[in-house]
Image 1 (spheres, protein in one colour):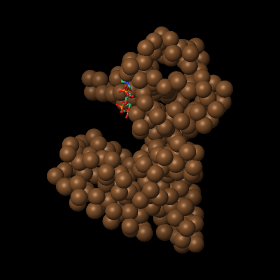
Image 2 (image 1 turned 180 degrees about the horizontal axis):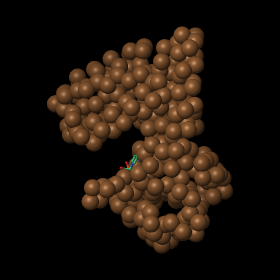
Image 3 (image 1 turned 90 degrees about the vertical axis):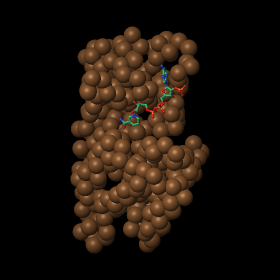
Image 4 (image 1 turned 120 degrees about the vertical axis):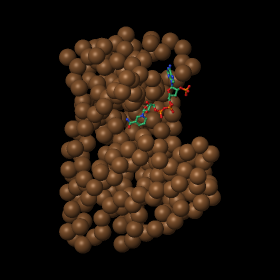
Length: 285
Ligand code: NAP
């Protein structure tokens, strides 16, 4: 039987302990952690993601400061706003809601975030430190995936993990985390030959492609742990990259879409913000 692992449930539990931590700080007379969110333009999906992040922060007692900037802002002005946030001692974490409107350079914008406040883990310094196994911020979705595997009682050590997708946001960092957890990792992408054969060798299968239901039961080894990262809209309904109904009965455990990886991504953003606050407090005292 396939176990369905809900990120929505796991994130609620983790958020409770974050709430307790923040409440304790407030009781001690300390300020609350604060996340600054930079939203450029009014792309409806971005606006809705930002609202979700603000609500999640509120639920655990993290303050938010959302900076709404015009879609026509110049690169120089955007960078200057990001630097201002970086220099604000009351701000612990900074998140730039991506994608930025066409014409703005995301890499240059991200490089303006103070690496100590880079709770999305996308600053080149954090990326480099992560790959050098030095303390750093790690992107939220890969962190959430590792928590979901723990929840599945899956220890990656000695297992063959296949990651389909090699983006810098998901596929590449999650492959690194799995390697660090002593899995043997194969990374697949759009040029991979024999994807089905490779996927069939996976004890752990992570799918981060962005194509609705491209992975069905024929790609899944009996009993595999399957994490479906994809979020696709089909006829007004959200679905993952894995054909969930087909995978049921074949996978050992699987995450659904929605209520799977998505809530864990936000939860890890909160966790990274709390970590940034704690590191800042240590530094100040
Ligand atoms: P991305 O940057 O577009 O990367 C997609 C990856 O899939 C690329 O490496 C691409 O290969 C590979 N790919 C494309 N077609 C393929 C195929 N037919 N067979 C094998 N590999 C293929 O996307 P992303 O940012 O990683 O996101 C992936 C999905 O996860 C999207 O649906 C996104 O919305 C979702 N997502 C969800 C969350 C969440 O919190 N739930 C967070 C982030 C992303 P190449 O490198 O060769 O092009």
